[in-house]
Length: 161
Image (cartoon, rainbow, N blue to C red):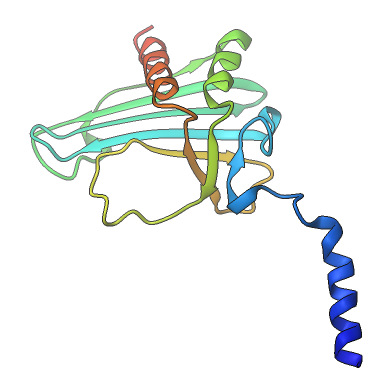
């Protein structure tokens, strides 16, 4: 009888919270992750084709300013390292540019980081960091392939400006 009472008490305490979190551990940007919670976003591609190529984009906030960092590595050997950087730089974004960036993320999903050892792909690998994360809900996916393509074109325009 005591065990049944404990089970009933546990259920009574947990049922009000059922459904409060995201389904299946999938967080939707704009729904479960608010734009003001975002702290950093990384987009990285690293190819092992010849010649190898590495490209990273990073969006972040520093001293209250919105920033965009880019780094390109090129060479004729693997692995490409920081010494193979051919172009890099940091751009301070306008409010409009930051809002455009946030628009690309809206509707995308974030899940717990996973190893993709069987994948063997060149990326892109996408990681979103936010204040509500406890240290492992960071693997990002755009809502659509078209949105990812528009994001990449946006980054290229920032990089080339």
